[in-house]
Length: 151
Image 1 (cartoon, rainbow, N blue to C red):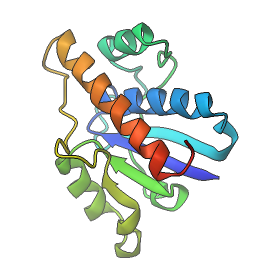
Image 2 (cartoon, one colour):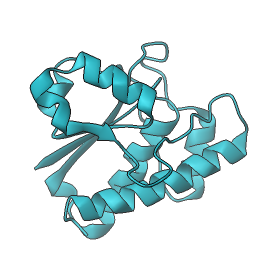
Image 3 (spheres, rainbow, N blue to C red):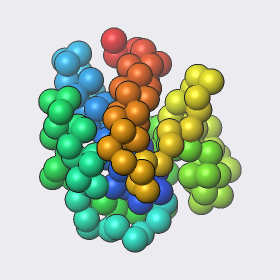
Image 4 (cartoon, rainbow, N blue to C red):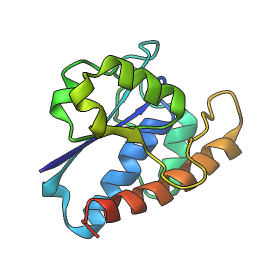
């Protein structure tokens, strides 16, 4: 079993969307039983809250239900529980690397690997920002599927 944790700042916009998109992507390949998928935030402001309604809306428009997810903060034991910890941007990556032990840093990386490496935080913008995040996340999830050799 491979375990993947998606991480953004508050765990209400980008990382729950990535969790939902990757879960759907893995299900479509028939490998749900081989991958554990979760998301968390580096901050604790939204702990216990559902995803931002705009993330829920863009997910639903693409056939994905993330409405039942609840925000949580990254915990120390996540560094032992997950094989791969994917930060949505460089700020969260730096936070995760400071929080994790030196021997765990090889499992912590940016989610996107192309020229657009940061998934922008859409929280203070409009609906278009959430659609843009969805498109970036969808592309990143397909790349991740290939990286994990599940395609």
